[in-house]
Length: 25
Image (tube, rainbow, N blue to C red; front, top):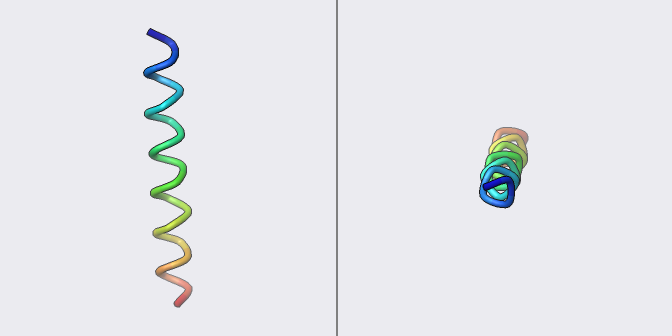
């Protein structure tokens, strides 16, 4: 239910942050 949605959001956020860091490099 909600727990799953929150997990998905967290995963997406983390991936976005990693992508931004890789782009900066």
